[in-house]
Each structure stands twice: as C-alpha cells, then as structure tokens.
Amino acid sequence: MLPKNTGTLDRDLRLVLGVLMMIPAVFMLTGIFQIIVGLLAVVLFATAAMGFCPLYSVLGIKTNKGEVPGK
Image (cartoon, rainbow, N blue to C red; front, side, top):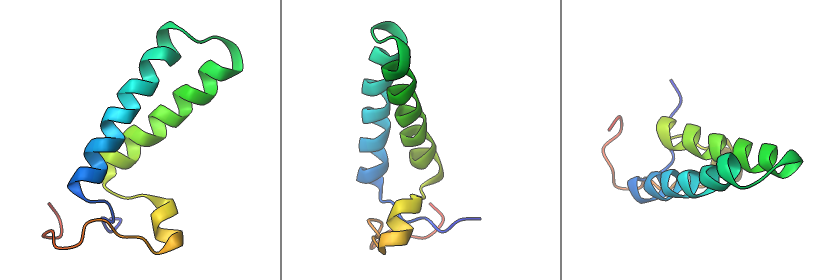
C-alpha cells in the first residue's frame, strides 16, 4: 500500500476541484479540451481517494503532518 502524503484538507480540495472540472468536461466542452479536463478530473479523484500524490512524493511534500497514519 502506498504511504499517505495528502492531508484531509488537501484531499477535500482535490475532490471539489475534480467535481468542478468534471462538470464542464461532461456537459460543456468538446474535442481535445474535453479529454484533457476530464483526465485531469479523474487524476484529482484518484489522488483524493488514495490519499497519495505521486508528484508530492517526487518533490518531498507531505500535507498530512500530525494525522494518524492509515486514517
């Protein structure tokens, strides 16, 4: 299992941003913009669900300081 490196606020923001990006991707955009925005929204959903951000891992960022591991 991957170590969690995103905090609760970070995950919540990713979830909200994912929803806000998915709405135009499904209903308003067309073509390549629809694909790009939709994929970005899916990545945000996935990182929010897993609690792990690969980019944070590479950059050495951790936003879950002070949280109990595994929750």
